[in-house]
Every structure is written in structure tokens, then in C-alpha cells.
Amino acid sequence: MKVLLAPGAGAPPASNPPSRPLASARPCLVLFAFLLLSAGIGHAQAGAGTASALEVLLRWMPLLLKAFVFNIAISVLAMAVGTATGTVLGIGQLSGSRAVHAVSWLVTQFFRNAPWLVLLFFAMFLLPFEISVGSVSVALPDWVKATIGLALPVMANVSEIVRGAVRSLPSGQWEAAESLAYSPRQTLWLIILPQCIKRMLPPWMNLYAILTMATVLASVVGVSEIMTTTGQVLASEGGRPDLLAPLYAFVLLLFFVYCYPIARWTVRLESRFSVKG
Amino acid sequence: MDAFFEWFRVLYDETGINLPFLYDDYDRNRMVDGFLMTVKLSLVCLFFSVVIGVVGAWLQGSTLKWTRRFVNGYIQLFRNTPPLVQLYFFYFAIGSQLPKVATDWGGQAPVLGSFAWAAISLSFFAGAFNVEIFRSGLEAVPKATVEAAEALGFSRLRIYTDVTLPLAFRVCLPALNNNLVNLVKTTTLAYAIAVPEMLYEANQIWSDNVNVTEMMVFLLIVYFLLVGVLVWSMNRWERALRIPGYG
Image (cartoon, rainbow over all chains, first blue to last red; front, side, top):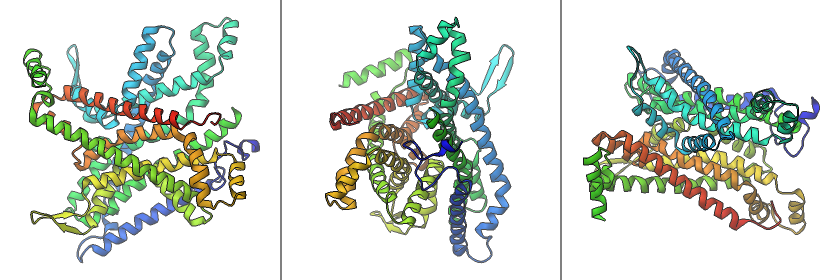
């Protein structure tokens, strides 16, 4: 296993070797200090008789954390939906049938090149508020619509990841499977895709981090996730301008603490797989 | 031209496809303004994010430990937090602390408006990615090239601007291309702090005319074209910069 981390062309720079677990704790500390500092600025500006920024933050912490968990839930759900549909779309792009290939390609390009926020508006306004199947009608709450809106660009990106990974495998794999009398479907599911997972994992995790950070966009279309909740907390504290910096810094910190380990892990996986080839 | 625009009014009457930004003067001006604002915001952010990337990559190669740490901290902070929260932090938290200036009509306005903050915030966001992109390009420049330049007596800054950066630039153009496309798409976030860009104006129009579907399709097409123009010109630039036998 030592070989995997040997310095080489593809290895990360020596300043932050991925093998040191403590290295990832330092930026968190810096950010926490930044949060305390902004809370301190807020405290210095607040007059006597008002709660300090830190007190306000502690008081609303449970609510904010709950809202953040909601963000995470949306991201996990959108990722699951996006991955499932994206994989189908990606395989469709590799299809031998010209029509299937063209349609999958077009759908992928369309959703990959549109801004996330516009797609979110798209889903918010154009999906019905409830779906009726026969006599049963299922209500679509706004967060479900937001999840669908976020799953659309994820789907297109997963499609490209799948296509790229399958294309990156040497064609000898297909030929060898064919000579062993595997059907094309069996080749894809039993031989090609299992090998692709290793290659797809780093970009897929990268995409998940991007998606998590995009969940705050749902606040623009009115889903009560963390940005909306932060706005409500600010309003209920009487709109004090000195609270703006600490509260927004706290939201930044939450996302940083969640996304930074994912980014580190991705880098580590990438460097490991790049040596193995 | 008027006949052309009038045709869309007829289209609306006949089929119900409502495109007021074509047949209505007022809506057309709004849409054109929004489009120009998006282009302007994109160009400003493209320029500054590349400048931040170039300067950041230079600072990252610094011999001072704290300079490198500072740049790394900046990259990690901006890469791992949502751009929308960054925008809010800049606009509401920092923007509200700045002094106000008197406007022409006797009111008070912040020193930096929403456009300026959107430009600053998005430039820093995309810049963090650009630093990493330029760094990966610099790593691809052969060491011998740098040593040769050192032997010829170039200073560290001259080596960077005259030798390594031009070579690195060619290597990292595809990655840069990708990030700049993302930046153009991210300019829609400026909607959240009421910069009158395309999404904002489209929102105004669909609020007045209740034609969300048409406006949405129109928006997607326009962004598609904007991104297409950017990719096309970057590809042309890539070809123009190509050195035969290199990369």
C-alpha cells in the first residue's frame, strides 16, 4: 500500500499529503476562529440589553441544524434520483440504436448546459402541485419539486460520467467478453460497469459535493431549508444588522464541515486510482 | 422589423404562445437590458476570476509558508461552501458594514451596489477554482524548462510571466473552459440579490404576463446560446494558441 502514496506525476503536492488525517482538521479550526471573530464584531456593535451574537446563535442552533439536516436529506434524495436516471441516460448514450443515442445525448446536453437555478425554477413552476392517478391524488410539496429540479442537472452530469467511464475502458474488454460468448447486456452489467465504478466514484463524489452546495438554491424558490430558516431567525431577532455576519458565517461553516471531508476523500481516491490505472 | 414583432402578437392571439418580450416594447427593453446585464456580469467575472487565478497560482508557488497557507485556505473555503451563501455573506454581512454615500437625489446608498457585490463574490468563487486549474497547468511544465530559464538569469517573476505561465496556460485551457462555462451559469445567482440580469427580468415578465413556460424555454435557449458562444470562442482561442509539437 505504500506504493500508492509514492510521489509521482499524478500525486498531490507535498504541502498537503492526503495520508495525514490531522491536516484536514486545521482549516476547520481556522474557519471556526473566523466565526468567533465575526461573532465578536457583532458583539462589539450590539448595544447593552440585547443578546450577544453568540447567545442568539446558541439559542437558534437546534433549528438551524435541523434545517441543515433537511438540506442534506434533499441532496441525498436528489443524488439517488439523479444517479438512477443518469445511469440509464448514460447507457442510452452508448446505445447502438441511433435514435436512443441521439435522444439521450440531447437530453444530457440540454440539462448539463442550463443553469441550476433556471432548472430549479423550471421544476418549481411547471410541475403540478399534485398528481392524480385515477381517483388517487398525491400532493407534491415544494421540497419534492425542488428535489426533482436539482436531480435534473445531476442526472445529466451522471450521464456524462457514466459515458466517460465506459469509453475510458480499453475496447479489448468488450472483445474479450464477446469471444467468451457474453451477450452485450451481460458484458455491460457483469464486466464493464463493475470496472467503471472505480473510475466513476471520484467525479461522482465531486458532483455530490456540488449538489449539496446547490441545495441552498431551493431557498430562492421558497423551500424552508437553511437559508430560509436563517432569514427567519434574522427577522425574529428584529433584523439586527450585527447578526448578519455571524449567522451567515455559521451557515458557511456548516457546509464547509460537511463538504471539505468529501473533497479530501475524493482527492485521496483519485490519487489512489490514478496509480493503479 | 415591426411586422416581424407584430407576427408574434398574432401568434399569441392564434395559438396562445405568449412571447411579450418580442411584440411589446417595454418587455423587449427589459429583456434586452437583462441580457446585456448577464453578458456584462459574465465578462467582468470572467476577467477578474482569471486574474485571481493567475495571481493566486503565483502566490501558491511562493517561498513564504504563510502566503501558501493563506492561498490554500482561500481555495478550500471558497470551494467547499455554497456560492449563494458566499454571495449573501458579501452582500448582506459585509455590504451592510460599509459606509453609505449620498446619491444624486439626496438619498443614501451603499458604496457598493448589488452588481458590484455579485461581481466580487462570483469572481472570488470562480477564482478559487482557477487557482487550482492554473496550478495543475504549472505542474505540467517540465522542470528542465524552469531550470533553463534560471540558468539564463530570469527572476522568479519573469520565469512565471514569460516562461511557465504561457506554457501552463495552453495545458489548462480545457479545464479553464469548463470552469468559465460554470461561471456563466452561476451568474444566475445574482438574481437572489436583485441584480437585474436575465433571470430577474424574465421573472418580472412572467409575473406580469403569467407565461412561465414560454419564458423558461426562452431562458434555457438563451443560456444554451451564451454558453455555446463562449465554448466556441475558447476553442478558437485554444487553436490559435497551439504550439506545434507541444501538448
